[in-house]
Image 1: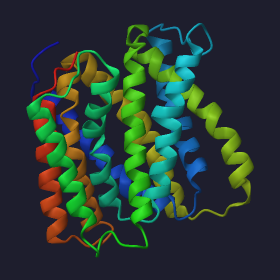
Image 2: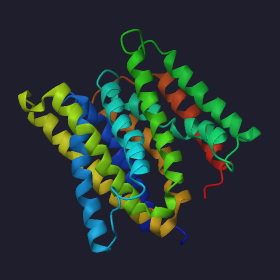
Image 3: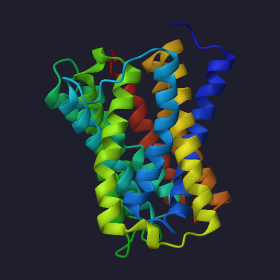
Image 4: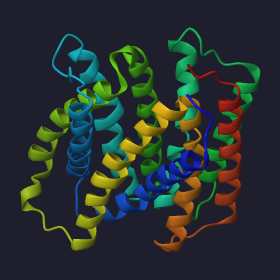
Length: 293
């Protein structure tokens, strides 16, 4: 791994920009597409560049071989469930709020890692960061203009979606020796297998009449925010390592707030800004006191 250069920093910011922009596009896509179908189309488009990577790098995809149960479980917990829950939640809350709530993944991940890993125990400073981060979330819930009785359930659903990302990450650690490209491709294939019957039987997408705007947003989510973004992520991981790549967590909610305010005309209150600062500070403390291996 090498020290980040100007182009590496550019790629990291670009990745955060793309992922930060995904939330307002999810919002627009939900105007016409149901959550299972939305998630399904996203991962279908994401699978294309993954298969191309494996083909050109001559990497064998082992989705249905000995470790298929692990790939299936990760595909369910790390892709199918969170993609669906985020779509359900974002449909009823501000897009920037979804980005902020999703940024709690490192916080919930640290709590889970304390109980389910040997080397990631919660230290005093890390506990301060976790508590601080969730104080930011609680402060956000106190803003009745943003979260109220009409949508607080959907805000909670979004947080649950982010927690499943953390669960999926922990499960992935168990098979990290199987290769990043193989694991990502195999789990994506299994996520598609899980999503297809739910989309067909519960949403009958062939009966929908999506708008042009929603379709463009969904295509963006699949091709750019999932497929192309994963290519950038692969490049950063292989060139600069996981520690550098995780810094994207600080930028995503900032871009999410920016896009929500300027493109979606969503209301930004002083409580939102304060909450964002508190959450990011909590994440910083947690990551500063976490050894990523």
